[in-house]
Image 1 (cartoon, rainbow, N blue to C red):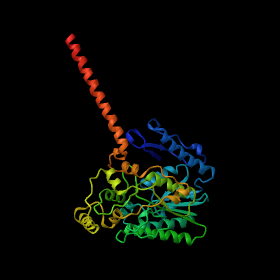
Image 2 (image 1 turned 60 degrees about the vertical axis):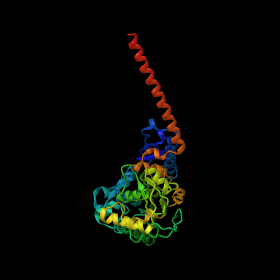
Image 3 (image 1 turned 120 degrees about the horizontal axis):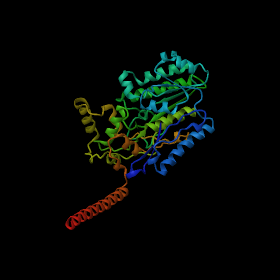
Image 4 (image 1 turned 135 degrees about the horizontal axis):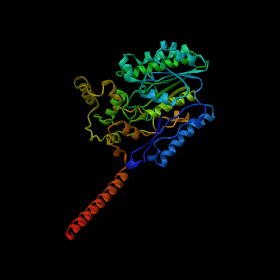
Length: 397
């Protein structure tokens, strides 16, 4: 399901439109939009833009060609990508041993080009549960790519590989050096995994690799524990630093994977919404009270002690990512045909406990307050009239 959001719904709430897209032989098989009764004209415009993107790909012959092998597709991102690929020759495998399954062999034996998509190496929860590093997971995916003779690999990494630093440009582009925090093992593993992917491409002429580096990815119902920890830290910074943040909707990440597959992208691409959210604005969205600014060293000590003794939500290695900037530019992926449909603020409000009205501008809040006041006065007047009539009727009776 492809979800499209716009921010002009009732009382400022983002409208949600669900589109079930089947990437079949003809774009005419794109199913109808559901839940249109509560969707405004701007929302329909966004949907039509999404449909136009599908049609343009179809006209250019840029639909997924051949077989698609998905690894690590058991999480929220995997379910979304699988839905978008409904109708294609898609198989989901966990490791090399799954290639012997009958359903996998039926697809692979057709002799078409094969694209392998790694959705699991950057899945923090799965890697932690299996006690398997992201580097090991990527190596397994590349082994699968070799076994099936893949012509293309799409690898979902993370913008965490850039590291968080005071001197980071805002935003970071794909040319920026990778400087993951030394204490955050997972980010270093992803950086190493990207090196494996690049080595695979260099040693296999004619093959392409698309590496996606998404910002913090969220959706209703939550994201990974890692994303939850980052979101918690963004809204409750203790240090004097107050860098901007980005919140990417998982639906938009899923469509980015689709663009990588459909257009056979080659290279590294950041995945993020347009722009970013200032730290002050994040706290306003979360309803957090004004922060107490503390020296950075002291804030790191406080967070470390909380994690060690009180099991605080932010592990020490992740703390720098809540204190220093690491927002990324989406210009390269946009130029390749991808367009984000959900804003930073909409994703944050939908995916957290933030009240919806925090998204409203001061002007809109004032308008709603005035409208509510008028309605209240009208209700009081009507109630008074009804009571007066009732008393008058009793006297006459």
